[in-house]
Amino acid sequence: MPPIASPPNQNAAPAIRATPLAAGETVLIGHEIYRQSTYGSKHPLSIPRVSTVLDLVRAMGWLHDDAYIESPRATPADLARYHDPAYIQALIDAERTQSLDAERRVRYNLGKFENPIFPEVFSRPATASGAAQLAARLLRDHGTVHSPAGGTHHGRPNRASGFCYFNDPALAILGLLDQGCTRVAYVDLDAHHGDGVQDAFAEDGRVFTISVHEHGRWPFTGAVGDRAGGLARNLPMPAGLNDTELAHVCTHALVPLVTTFAPEALVLQCGADGLADDPLSKLMLSNRAIWDAAAALLPLAPRRLVLGGGGYNPWSVGRCWAGLWAILNGIDPAVPPTSAAEAVLRGLTWNRSQGRNPPEHWFTTLADAPRPGPVRPAIQQVVDQVMTP
Image (cartoon, rainbow, N blue to C red; front, top):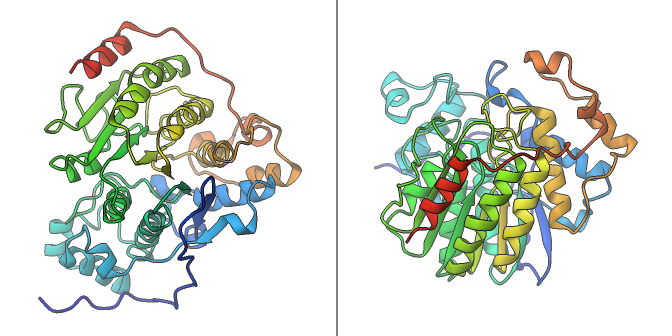
């Protein structure tokens, strides 16, 4: 096989921090590539997400310069730690020419609505992957990294899947294993099953994957009985999942499972598509439920990587992940936004019907109103099954 050609528009890489994090140190990895890059005007990922998070945490005074790191872009050699070189080359070619031959479109699941060819089709996912691999190096000993661009948990070694071109959580976990970790826990709170990560480590006893997702939602995997050979647990949730129910799942399943595994590192995927205001699921969570779950899980490992994931309403995803950064720094996000933060929220647009007449609280609050409710028998049944040896 010939060597992989250089990707287009490969600018000189910024100076990247090489020293691991100190005990208690928390950093955010981001990049300006996400500000203008979209999958296309009709795609669910046409909305601003990472740029909104960065703008909000800065407007709130929550992000200091020394806590922000610009993401490197993973090289083809970096990506080949998990992905097929021929597939990597296909994405490089697709970005350079904005097209791809029919045979490779089919082989790599590219060029359709789900995984379109767009101007940064290689550079954008390679930047999120570079953040994941840098995070693994920074977390050599301890500390916390937040990478809101990460969480592309459907990506496969040799094809795109579910809006995910590369699998940055898998690359991060491999990096942590390369650093010498022998037990890595991966907890996925996205509304969609973390199928790509589970399958990547189904035969690796060093990695324990747990996914909380909506039952019957694409990719239609992650049944409660699916343990992927042993070190996997799946908690499919019925539509209408409320805050009380997620707290119950966290207290009675997630925390005990992770505690028993005693991980040296925790990778937490915090997809925001399970929130009540998101258009791509039927779960009914507030952003407080995600923050509370993160607060309960993060103390269970000395090395913590917190990723984004799904989320298709610009207001709900931006507010959720900005508040998550506050939680990671011991700040209460349930405070009124500053005038600068409110201006960020009022400056967002969304071409769906909800976005043409957004409710006022999307502009004037960061924390959703709580969404409590009863714990339904179906929830308890899933917890009981998952906790059965």
